[in-house]
Length: 232
Image (cartoon, rainbow, N blue to C red; front, side, top):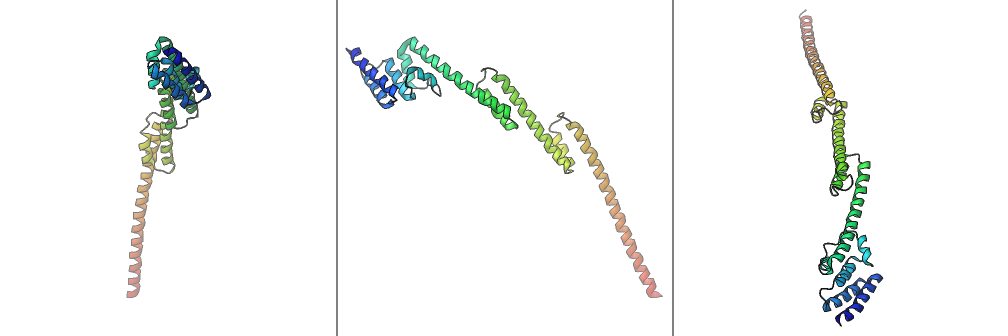
C-alpha cells in the first residue's frame, strides 16, 4: 500500500522536474519522504531540483560537482551501489570537463603571456589541475617564461639607466641578473664609463681651478697696473 501511494508521487515529482518546476518537484519528493524516509529516488529528485536538472542524466552537465549536497549523500546512502556508480560517473565527467576548461584557459593565457605576472597566473591555473594531461610540464614552462620576463625587465631597466648615463645605478641593476644575456659585459662597460667620467670630472675641476687662478692673477695684475699708473 505504501509503495502504491509513493509511485504516483514520484512520477509527479519527476514530471515537475522535466517542466523545470523545481519547487513543486521538491515538494512532492518531500511527500514521498514523509512516507518513506529512506527513499533514494526521492532524494535523487530533490538533488535534481536543487541543481536544476530536468533529467537525471543532466546531472553530468552541472557546472560544479554536486557531492557537497546532503541530498546527494542520502541518495547514495539509501540507493545502493548502482546509484552510487551512476553518480560517480556524473561526477567524473563534471570534473574532467572542468579540468579541460581550466586547461584551455591556461594554455591560451600562456600563449599570450608577455609579462611575469601573466605567466605566474597561468602557472597557478595549471597547478589546480596537476596530473591532468601535460599540466605539470606546462606549469614549469610558465615558471620559466615568467623568469625570462623578470630578467628581461631588469635588463631593460639597467639599459635605460645607461642611456641617461646613470652608470652606477645600471651596475647595481645588472648585478641582479648575473650571467643573463650580456649583463656581465655591460657591467664592465659601465665601469669603464664611470672611470672615464670620473677622469673627465677631475680634468674639469683642475681646469676650473686654473681658470680661477688665472682670473685672480689677472685681477692682481690689473690692480698693480692701475696703482703704478696712479703713482706716475
